[in-house]
Length: 415
Image (cartoon, rainbow, N blue to C red; front, side, top):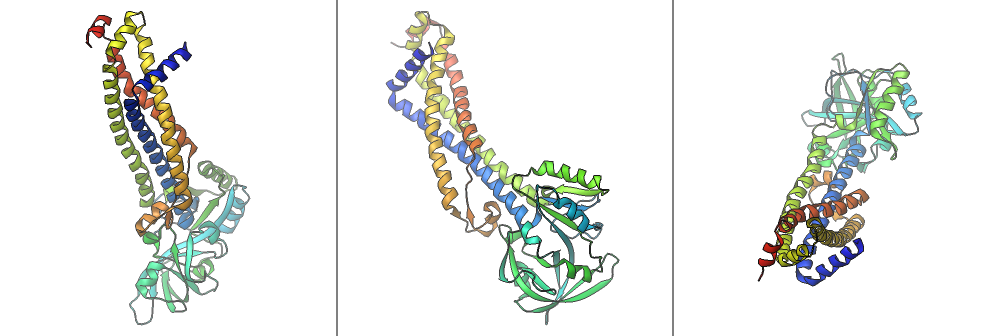
């Protein structure tokens, strides 16, 4: 029976080639649009997430127990410091899912350059041997990356505002937690940018954590935070819980956060950009559904007499409706397949060649100077099944309306 209905569906589709082509083209465009929207949303989210993690944050951030909000890009004078940071790092590095753990200090201060008024700066103190493995998207534009004990590397924005150059001497002034000021001479060793986020955080500057501890009168194992980089296969959510349990089991009551909790407005931007394509997709789907419904309604109305003949011969209403729905299912499967093949080729091409980003602010979305689409099998499957389902829903109500006619009325409707 099903084979017979399938053959009837193919024959009926072949009888009206132009209408079938136009309807199929609309379905194919809908499937293509759905797949590209899902792929774009997935790619942008992955790109921005990778940028945030590898340009500044790390996957997981550990702080001393503190209830207030901690902003990743702003110093917090009220937050207590981590003690025994070396021991905590050893505990975390024992986990196979952990790639690296980097200690950091972050504070605000003043930079005094010859013949210029002091300028306010934000400084992140890092271990120069460890930090590059956590934030590999911090790229050195000029000079070197903290090879000197008294070296400082400036963010590109800071370097431009200070008119600084490699080898220039400057004085960094900062206060410790007791409020005492201290000044320390530094030499500009390098200028860096944060790939993908340069426009937003190239005001960040770096010195070695040993120099910062001397400047701020801190012990050698004190740190503001530990940034944890996970291996690619690790589940971030599960690792937050696992790290909390490991620390508690060793007597440490610390604050363990995903990078999302400390990224502030930037995580809101990631969520917003992820939602925008989905809203546009809903609008496009509604337009496609309206077009398909209209096309199918016209098709069914043209076949009212055929419907009346089938029902007069004893064909049940649900069987007639089944014929129409099977036709549209066959058509939508074939058309969606064509649309998704085209979409896959587009994704693979852009994923290989990339699209150059000419606006610096958009590098956060692309994760660098080129935007690459990332193929996602789930997006392909959802687009295929979703297109068929949406098309069937669009066809259901016109088919139902037509099959509710009495056989006699259907036979008389077309002369």
